[in-house]
Image (cartoon, rainbow, N blue to C red; front, side):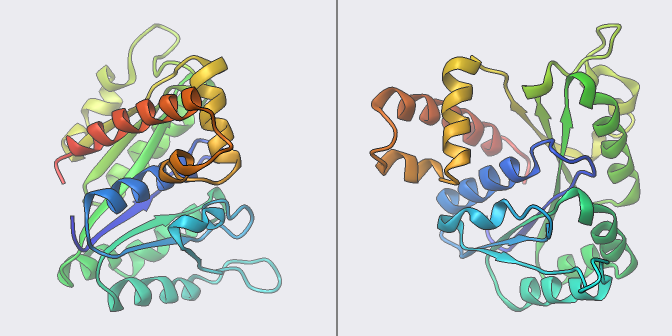
Length: 242
């Protein structure tokens, strides 16, 4: 994949945006010889920035009085447009609305496509108590733009089903917008004591799967389980209709 731009957008905090950003970035890094450029617009919790192997660039959009200056997003767009390769943009809950408003008001999606970029929005829907808010965010994003969507189903908070047992992807909410979805990735709920603990250890250390493979901080079984997880995720990403 060359000259693609991936926006990780979801208004709810703590739902896994940075995790998705790191997965997408690692997939692009191993799938393409094109340069990879990563950006973090979260000024409060710039977690993506801490993944040194991904060379993430911080885009400061807050002024000294802690308000967001939409014009500062210009630096992000100019950087993306001036260089080739694949881009991943992670945003925090505090910058979601300003960034989306900026992208829409300035017709940035059309500008990127006119410049030869393929543009995708990755949106996350979580299970359990997060389902309602994240499903609402999915609908809002789907209705606000015609950009292809990649849906990430995060089972970490529980299965994506309503109290009546209806699965999200079978709901009218999803069906009404499913034509916009070019791929679905399931962040499967695995054994918390093994897979969950290993992924948490990797994320806490801000390491990529490749770094884990070469690290003496992980034993052979921890490395194996992380390999299993990323093999599954990369296979799912390979099925997306890019």
